[in-house]
Image 1 (cartoon, one colour):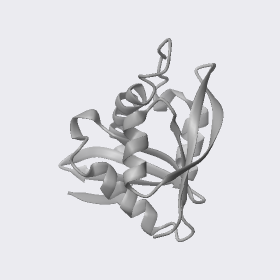
Image 2 (image 1 turned 120 degrees about the vertical axis):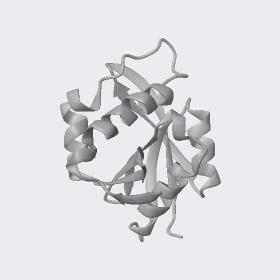
Image 3 (image 1 turned 135 degrees about the horizontal axis):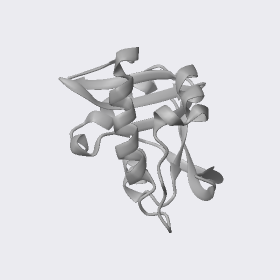
Image 4 (image 1 turned 180 degrees about the vertical axis):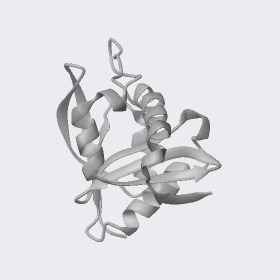
Length: 147
């Protein structure tokens, strides 16, 4: 088991994890969402490409993170690997590269993810409304100072 830098051959695994985890991220939003796959979302791909991306691999890629400028843009773990330390390992690796601390946005309806971040020292500092699929989603803004 290892966290390592992303390489291009990881892209299909990352896309699979994104699709699986994004559905879960928005599962508690009213009305349901059609999830746009990462490989078909040009804006998201642009943000992904400018980010420092790490993957967690244990025979296959099980999760990934993307960070840019002290902002954790993504931390997704495949549903089959949750609760096994994958998210924590990725978060620790990202944190090691963020001496000024980390901030992130998490869907306010995603209680499991909020609990995970709180257990890892993050605190809510505000809310923001973002669009996904042309609909408003309320995100909790969270921050953790450097450790």
